[in-house]
Image 1 (spheres, rainbow, N blue to C red):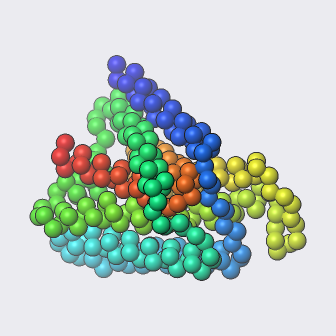
Image 2 (cartoon, rainbow, N blue to C red):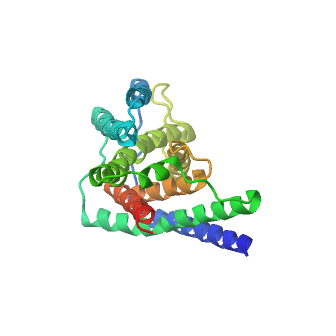
Length: 276
């Protein structure tokens, strides 16, 4: 019975994800690939490395505090604001347009893709059932979930919720979908098309080249998105979440859509953690 339930959840998750991809392909406005020159590519890697080092330094600076709020959520808020600032700086420097202005279309799409993220919860359920069948025990809760559940005080919980529901979606979507995805798409598009501006090689970019660059970029960025959450058990569900968020961005060419999808998903998780 447990194996049947796992298969059903896994099939539902896969079916929804495939349906989202196919539907997006039919209706997508598309996200333009960003073709970086060598200096801009180096600058991007420098900014990412610098942000990571600052994040580690901030975490260490607050690690001596006894309060989990000061030790975890204050550094998290600082890093989230830093990430937003880095993305805004870099995208303005290269002249990329994030389309951050909310429209009825982008909001509606964001809500619609949120319902598609139910497949992520189904995938998580599938992984949990398989884990219990193999090891005979439940998967241990993620430390972030346990920490949130143990927070005392209204303002402390409100700050944590603000970080999870508002700032995390904005910072992560700006970084992964808004900045990184178009850049990776541009690198792959140059590779699969054989175009190289610096070496004088150039040919017309085909529709197949554009599709391949979008697919590979979505997989790479979603894998990186999964890795930063540092959870082996949640790796596959978060990867699928990343794919759906890329689809939300491709559907409207507005970063508002994946931000809304991500925010609603986090809000649903906070609700389940605190109420259910």
